[in-house]
Structure formats: structure tokens, C-alpha cells
Length: 412
Ligand code: GLV
Ligand code: MN
Ligand code: MN
Image: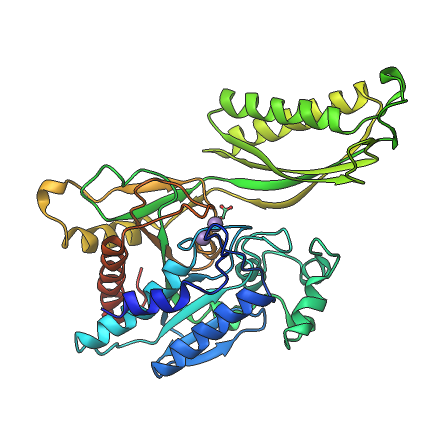
């Protein structure tokens, strides 16, 4: 199977020599190299590669047009991310095309293999930005103005990559071509690890979001300023992080503060400003609201107690996604054909991770296949899937695509 070769080709692109982590950020360096790799690999296969108005790449097997089946994932990473989150679905899609061809399969419909930009929000802060833009889920003017850590805007970075930022926004002509979208992805938990199933099917994505909190205090000397005279923004942040943890425990949710900028970031200077980001997720909207509202209250109280000003802004919110039940069950039936009955039913899994498939699901019948992750670790250089399971994922995707590409009329 071509999967191993494709995987080995992409593996070094953007991998850190230190610990094997990936640094692929939209419109720059390794992400650009990975996109070039995709274009080359797809073109070599005779696929017609097009860049949509938002910078997402689409490699077409057959003519673009209504009634198409779409698959794919993303190539960007979180800071120091793993090899599999995103690339598995892109490499897997190309390998699935090879697999279908090696079976002598002739599609009745066109297939589009997509690479979405900025899925992780690793550079510009809003995750699934490429799919949000294409589906009209974010105001293009807001997207153009998003900045990276150096203050470069999305518009500037996109223009530097040779694309037109004035053209970004809802792309109903493209999205309207897709009858169905299926994303192959590494599992980001251990739900498959102790089963006899290398591949599972997605049921839902927890509602989630990102909130920026700016605590503005007063810069002063760490040695000479009396404790009572300080307005130290680190203190309310510390309270807020602990409150987020307690609220997540109370509501069986997730709440994480993993990114913070401290100004001026000197050991012996009380900061003037601390910006921190809350990532919160929960099984339902009420639980998520309870966590986020609780964190905001705790932050407000702590800021007041310490004489610090606080501004909170939602940077992205994503509602609960319930994938199409018909499609989910159809995929589970197809995947089941490759596993012995003794393995039991194909696992149908909810996840706390966001995906472009989730964003698309409000517009197109959408499904996801997960490949077993033996440790469950993700967003880390230690993220892993056994090659054998990766190949099983490709076979599952090829089986699913052969079914969808053969079906007459709308697929769901
Ligand atoms: C994307 O991987 C996310 O859920 O943060
Ligand atoms: Mn991810
Ligand atoms: Mn991903």
C-alpha cells in the first residue's frame, strides 16, 4: 500500500530535531512545505489541485461539480504537535485514492481531497479558520484582521503567500458541490486502545471555545514595592486557573489555560499586563456555559481583589456537533465488515477535540473515522498510531469512499 511511502515522505516536513515535535503554522515555513508536498503528491496522481478562495487546497479526482464526495483533513499543527493530527487524514485520503485505483474501482462521482488551512488556530488563534470561512462561519473582515504573535495579520500573511485576502469568505459554490464529507483522523483518546478495533466512527463533538483574558495591572519593582501597594495581574490569573480546574471537575468538563503572555516578562518586574487564554469544552452547552460563566466570575472577583482590570473576549465558539446518524451508522456497517464479529460492534465515539468536519457538518452530511491511538496522547510529539492501524484506516476510508462514490443521487 502507498500509505507507508506517502507517510515517510511527509514525516520530516517541519519536524523538530530536538524532540520530533511539529511546528507547522499557516502561510509560513513548514506548513508551506507541507502544502507543496500535497500539491506534488496529488498532481503526480493525476489529481487536479485547486486553491479555494480561503486558501484551502482541493485535489479533484474527476471534474469539480455538484454531487461530489469530499474527504481530507489539515496539515498545520499546534506548537510542538504530533505527526498524526491532521496529516493522517490527508495522507490517508491520497492513499485511499491509490487503494481504490488498485482495486480497479471507477467512481460514479467526483472526489475532492481537501487540506484545510489553520485548523489548529496555532498561528492566528481561531481554530478551523479555513472551514469557518468557507461555510460563512466567521466575518471575513474579522479574519483578515486576526494577528499572530508578531502582530502580522491574516491578510498580510495570506498576501505574502501569494493569495488574495480580499477574496476570502463564504464559498457556497464550493460547499454546495459536496454531498458528503468524511474525515479520517487519529483518535485523541484511549477509547479504541483496549479494543480489537483499529478504526472507530465519530458520534459527536463537544461544544467548546476559546476565551482571551487580559489582566491589566501596574508595573513596579519586585523588591521594593510593598505587597499591599501592588496591582499584580499574575495573582488573579493564578486564582482563575485554579477556579477553572475546580469548575471543570464539578461539571465533568475540560478547562485549560495553556497559553499566556506576560508583559514585560522580567523576573524582577511586577507585570503590567498578563494575557491568558481559556480553552473550555463540555459534553453539553449548559455544562460549558456553567464552566465559562464560573471562570469569568472567579476572574472578575480575583481581579477586583487585586486592583487589576480585566477584559474577557470570546475568540471562537463551536456548538455541539451531532454527526449525521444515517451516515455514522452506514460507516460503522462498512467498517464492521473488516473486523471479526468477536471484536464486537464498531465503537461510536464522542470527542472533545474540534475538527473541520464538525464545522462542515452544519452544511453538509459529515462523518469521521478515528484510527486507534495506543496511548491516547495528542497535541504532543508523543502522539502515535501503529502503522498497521494507519493502513487499516486507509482501507476503511477506501471502503467508505467506494460506497459513497458509487451511490446514485444524494448520499444521505
Ligand atoms: C483541535 O485539535 C482542537 O480540538 O483543539
Ligand atoms: Mn488538533
Ligand atoms: Mn486535527
